[in-house]
Length: 193
Image (cartoon, rainbow, N blue to C red):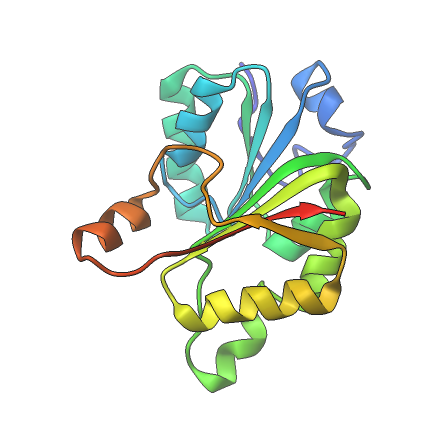
């Protein structure tokens, strides 16, 4: 049986994603994938790519693993780690084709702001991990996080804003919820330069 959920034990001798999947293919990462079907839909539409969902919460990671198993797809894995650590430890320089950061926890309380994943340090790390033509996509319903995204990407440097278009036509659960409530959603799509 294929290991879908990858934790410390499963990745003790990690040598790269080609070894995990058994072949080389474009690599697409969804940071904080949750239990959302978005990644499964992407993997179904793009079977020649490898998809990695990163999820820190154990219950959610196990639920998502079950959804992946039920789908029968073999081009998805779930990393059960904190996001910044996962990016540093399990992705080689210039290895990621597309990176999704969709509806990250805004941590609205002042004392929790330091917990936000979207930071200059994170974006600089991501820049190193993206391939020369790699893309970085941010989606949020929080205007402050959208502004923060523009600021930290600008401060980190090395990215050019492409558009505000989504790279895939699928909606996340949060998008569906916010669109039903007629709330604004802010999209940012960047290309590494």
